[in-house]
Amino acid sequence: MNDTQTLSQRADALEQKMSQELDYIVIKSRLYSMAEGDMGPPPNAAKLMAGNPNARVLMGDDPRLPSMPENPTLIDFFKYRFGPAAHLLQSARHAVNAGLPENMVLACLLHDISTIGFIRGDHGYWGAQLVEPYVDEEVTWAIRAHQVLRFYPDESVGYEYPHSYIKAFGADYRPDPYVEEDYKRMRNHKWYMSGRMITVHDIYSFDPDVKVELEEFTDVIGRNFRQPEQGLGFDNSPVAHMWRAMIRPAKYL
Ligand SMILES: [Fe+2]
Ligand SMILES: [Fe+2]
View 1 (cartoon, rainbow, N blue to C red):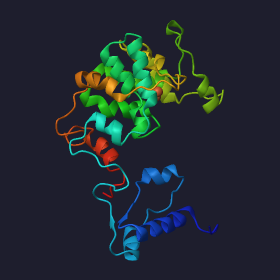
View 2: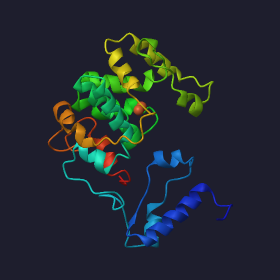
View 3: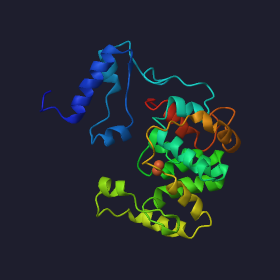
View 4: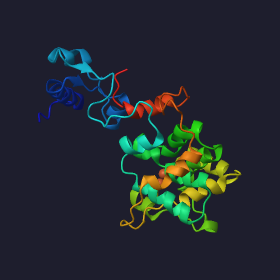
């Protein structure tokens, strides 16, 4: 690798190589290049196409990803788009065993879908937004709240600040001011304990030998998630485009 090349030149060279090998060209959204620390200009689609006149930028399905049904359900997203979901399945099983009501089992099952399928930072806020049109308001509220409440102990239910956070963020880490502000609001909310319950069942030290299948929650999903008949992404809801972004994450426009 030539060290004098900038990151974006290297990315261009890689894209060029790919475009010669494939009959399609992948142009990533700005968010992905910024996540690589790349503030360079976007890849030049015209230049890339000139190098391979048969190639096109992606406007349809991405051949590198599993194809999705025309009217995708929540379960289809678990199967074809979300990464490994063991943590969510185990959290939901834990909630069932603790006797939580079904809507809260669903909240535990969905609390990190943004982490495994969309965007990590502020994942509780993104995750709540993704499901808002399809679940009880309490479920949305609790998913958003778990993002914040994870950082604050509550002795009354035996919830401690996670040891893994001390390791991951350092002992001197303090949540951002907007998280602190949200905590103050959430602490006094009527659904505080619903959000808190997600953190209680947000288990990382689960027995790795325990296998939980998504099918265990088919009925819970059926009764508590209002699956749109046109499919997630195609129901003209305020969040449909967010689900479409997961179906075609590299769509050019
Ligand atoms: Fe989370
Ligand atoms: Fe979690």
